[in-house]
Amino acid sequence: EAGVVQSPRYKIIEKKQPVAFWCNPISGHNTLYWYRQNLGQGPELLIRYENEEAVDDSQLPKDRFSAERLKGVDSTLKIQPAELGDSAVYLCASTVGLAGEQFFGPGTRLTVL
Amino acid sequence: AQSVSQHNHHVILSEAASLELGCNYSYGGTVNLFWYVQYPGQHLQLLLKYFSGDPLVKGIKGFEAEFIKSKFSFNLRKPSVQWSDTAEYFCAVNGNQAGTALIFGKGTTLSVSS
Image 1 (cartoon, rainbow over the protein chains, first blue to last red):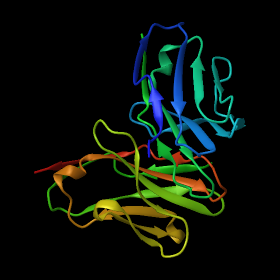
Image 2: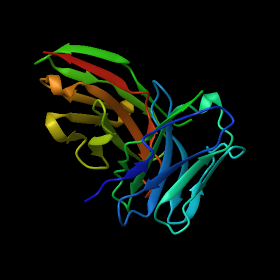
Image 3: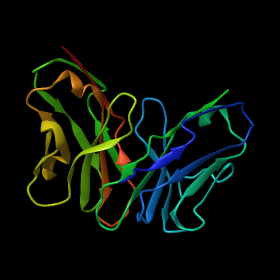
Image 4: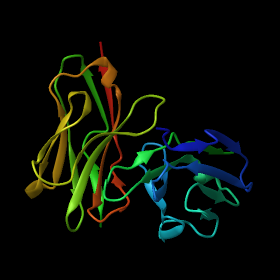
């Protein structure tokens, strides 16, 4: 069974540029999460989807971040414009039903110069 | 506020030494508890989890953890570490409603020398 797929794995951009990350969850997983992990910290939730609906986006900085999961499968997270403080690893995770365990992708390491 | 506290930032052990990593949480209501591990160059993967029942849970690679409700703790243990256990370990908690996001601690880096 394929795991959570993310691309790109690494991205280096200059501040004020836009950037997008893509995630394909495990097949059949209806719940998808985007987390951000700053250096030396644990992951922190940005947004959670149940199918195509964003059910928790309270931690998403909506002035510059946006996300979508149009068909309830893969998802895109966008930052526009990026700031120096956005440098972090962006993790995607998925789960299904009451299983509880979240499966994580390899993450995208973003560096903003 | 909901939070997870991991007591040790960096632990250095020799092979065959015993390991205990501390984790305390603050979370209202019934909780699920997790330990995730991230080996160098790899993604986060589940080590073990507690949902209900026996508070002593066993995970992969000889790890175990004990949930002590009165202390809001979920400490990770291994009686004899190996060099291959070198990794970063994260304690996490969420509510028992399906799909609730995880709240992570800051992580503990374990370095095991051979």
